[in-house]
Length: 289
Image 1 (spheres, rainbow, N blue to C red):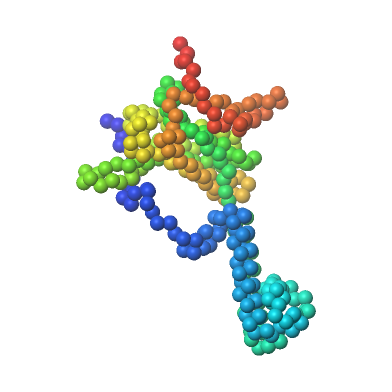
Image 2: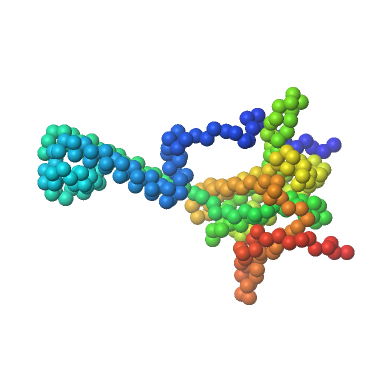
């Protein structure tokens, strides 16, 4: 009797889940934002803060050597105060202005500390530059129909003790008539790579006890099936754990094709990868007699 396939359930379903707003976890939102977005957010916050303090200075009118009624002078005085520049031309003359300067100076120091820590954390955050093939394919491998996809390490270093975990997610109905999302672990022919440097073709044999045994594009479409891939390993350069994740929907799985070879050997014997054909597939050749 075949061994049972590990199965996990998620009764909440995969489709509708409230997304937290940016202010619900602001630090995580800023840390995961792109560099242009982060710079835009910091610049926007800087301008807004200075506009608020400049309004206070303008209403009080207690800045010496500022042009009368010039909001622009108040704004640039605020910028000088927040950035602790202090040219010495304009200075506070009233109690209210001195209080505002004290508050703004404190906000500037705290803001500088927060932004410095955020930028450092973003620079030092370990990331994996792993490229996954556009398609996963189902084709014979050593005479056994297998699900295959390939990965490439885009960095010039190695990912040590790389490990992949692959699951099939599909929608099913319980005996009570409830629709649930269930996850089935897919056993790989090789789930670990001691040194992931160039490419890695992951293979899951579609044997009798495989959750994908006997499945077709149509059957996976009916249950909204998808293949979820997680890769973890140790970055050799930074000695930190990195991870990458990719999902193949049922529409990304191709039957009866094979990957185009991307490994090229140079005249000097060095092996290189031709990434221009990394996602290319071609029909299967007739089996050798």
